[in-house]
Structure formats: C-alpha cells, structure tokens
Image 1: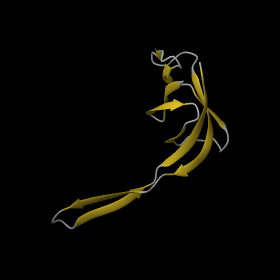
Image 2: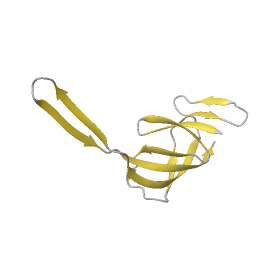
Image 3: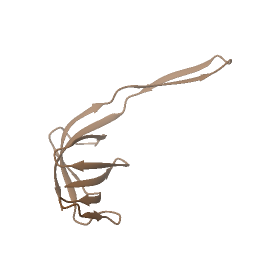
Image 4: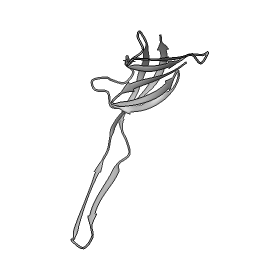
Length: 105
C-alpha cells in the first residue's frame, strides 16, 4: 500500500517501512509516534486508487520519529562584476527523519 501525504508544505509518496527526511517537526522527541492526517491519495495492493477531495476521509499514516538533524550547509555567493561587491552566506536546514510504520484506512 502506498500513500501521498502532505507535511511542511511539501508532498511525499510513502510506503510501509520507508524512511524519509521532512521539514522539522516541533516539540516531538526521538522515538515518539507521529500521525499524518493529510493523506492526499491512497493506492492499495490491488492498484485501486483513492483520490482525496482534498484529503482522503479516515485515512492516516503512522510513523516513528528517528532523529532531528541539520542538513548539509548550502553556500550562497552574490557577486557583481566591476563594482567590488561580493557577499557570501550559508544555510543549514533543520530536518526530521521519520520511519513509516503503517498506513491506516
């Protein structure tokens, strides 16, 4: 069974046993259970597709939080030719890794 969920302003395709990196979930510690209620689409074992309007009723995805971490640093450089202008800065995104336990219909 597969599902498409919405979290952190993004959509992810998940199946049971998958691990995925999503936007950081606040106030949740490692090992705690997470429930995603915003299920947009379901595909069952017989390839029957259920599309939500906007969400599938009574469907949810249960997951376990594995860890909170920071992603690799992204270096940004602004440069303008012949004006002696150059600015550099970096950014490290806060992420959460979750393991999908089961998809409940």
